Length: 141
Image (cartoon, rainbow, N blue to C red):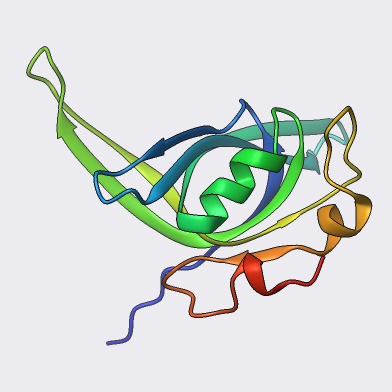
């Protein structure tokens, strides 16, 4: 039987990205994403719920996300769902699902000093190491 693991999300960052490096010097960035869902209930009342998702990206895309995205910025994320489990310091077993980002695209207009230009904010698409696409270095701007 075939398997398929693909996640597509559009949301806003819940915190500034946190960049770190693996011992192999590969960049890793972690950030939170809030995705809203709005609907009308059977009684006609407007309802809304927010889903908070932890995301992680590697390599050059991680450095780009860290450089240009800040808390509150909208972003389109494409990736796969991963399951992490570990033992906490108090000995309890812990686990969570996380999205490993393979592609992303900036959304919305940038604001503030040092922000990326409108062209870059709306036109950059970065592909992760497993996606096999062109890297951000190949984009001429």
